[in-house]
Amino acid sequence: MKALSINNLHKTYPNGFSALKGVNLEVEQGDFFALLGANGAGKSTTIGIISSLVNKTSGEVSVFGYDINTQTSLAKSCIGLVPQEFNFNVFEPLEEILINQAGYYGIPRSLAKQRAEKYLKQLQLWDKRREMARELSGGMKRRLMIARALVHEPRLLILDEPTAGVDIEIRRSMWDFLKQINNEGVTIILTTHYLEEAESLCNRIAIIDKGVTKEQTDMKSLLSSLNNETFVLDLNTNDHKIPDSVEGCEMILIDNSTIEVNIAKTHSLNDLFDALSRHGIDVMSMRNKTNRLEQLFLNVLDDQTQARNKP
Amino acid sequence: MTFSEQFVAFKTIVIKEYLRFMRIWVQTLIPPVITVALYFVIFGNLIGSQIGNIGEFTYMQFIVPGLVLMALISNSYANVVSSFYGSKFQRNIEEMLISPLPNYLILIGFISGGIARGVIVGLSVLVVSLFFSDLHIHSYLITIIVFLLTSTLFSLAGIINAIYANSFDDITIIPTFVLTPLTYLGGIFYSIQMLPEFWQQVSLINPILYMINAFRYGLLGVSDISLSHAFIIIIGFIIALFMFSLHLLNSGKGLKH
Image (cartoon, rainbow over all chains, first blue to last red; front, side):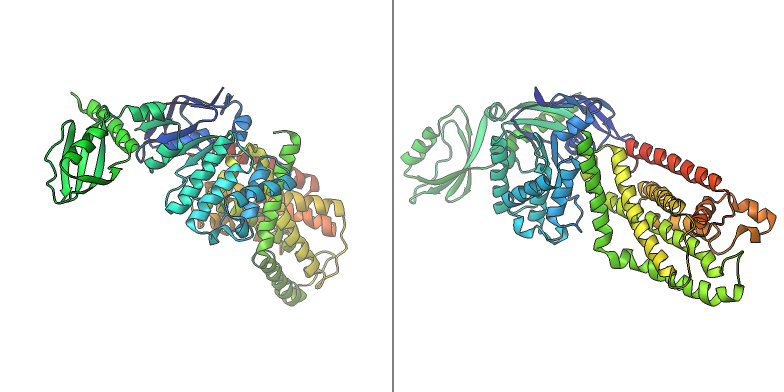
């Protein structure tokens, strides 16, 4: 059984704007699924429909086999949502927000208190449990929304840009936490603009563009479809001249000790290192110029744009 | 959701709503009591002593039911409209909308919060009125039923206003332009028997007149309106507003895109 199945989903707003023009998605149980797309591509509308905050125009959506229209209550019970915008009552204490959220799912108060303690502790918010939500920092508010989404222990957790505006340290700790709950069996759907985040966390990916699913595959296959990679090399030239070219590579001189190399994936990096070594140059460090997924994401969108522009 | 899960969910909304207005009790419970106490002093005591009796009751005794009900109406309404619109404005209503809670439970939960605040304020005003007049409650049953039905009705009206409201200004329109005039013209300070025939007939289209008179019957045993007519009107309005509110919630009006 699929954790999420979306078939030919359409959404047209009352002002006539078509946000979704045929989204199809299949998310397997246990997936850590990245849903990517440019701003306005339709990611949040799709999530809104899955979580019953947006009425769909047509199409079918089912969560763990439960249709969101005919088996609404069962479908909703399976979902935990971390929306893009803060949407808790800022005048309520953290613990109360979690206990109330659990209550809406029919979880008795005593159990809700235990769950609130568990998730507030896991997300390092327990010390703040009696503080009003408005007193939290941005990163804490993001973590509060994750704790709230988990308090009824959903099978499918949907996170709409959960690390937006969060510093690197907190982002990394959130990644660790999300990996942990995914390992415990929770299926996760993540939208993010940090493609490095999607690449390091997710095993499957879909790209939505202008309300249509453009790509849906597993992360490994997608990344392996990259033919070239660009590296930035920091060199110790030992006063030797950097060669103008190396066979099989495109080289650009950035400064006296840095080069940018575009190399086919079929070409061994050892050839490059050997060639530089022959010229008496040592490679001190090397890094990818761009995130690999970012390049692929742009490729997919570029392909679509070119296809549209063809006469 | 099973019945016991629904009960837990309902209890959660009621506790949440109760804590909401109790957390700010200085703003929610005290001002209406002070306002009505001033009415008792000025209209009941100072001016009322110049007016004399209405029927077999002093003017102070006559206005107590209307003033108690006015406090109940405005507080039931204010509680629900501000809470529901506040939840909509901050978008924390989405906490309920994404959960398996059926819409009728959301509705009943908010109404219960409105009833709780309306009844607490109403009872407080009733207690304050004892400092100004002797009250011997004619029928506890009718008094309690009218108390609960009226606060239910205006809690529902509060939800409808909150659903349609697009700004905090919008939630003051109905209290200012509808509720206050209808309440003042609903026979709080006078019996409609004192009006010319034409205005007596006009007064009969004011639903608040029926509530005030039914409540006055419960407290004093007198009413300008037949009790059965009053109950039919109140219950009819409750059913109509409940169905309309539920329809609005089901359609997602003002809440979903």
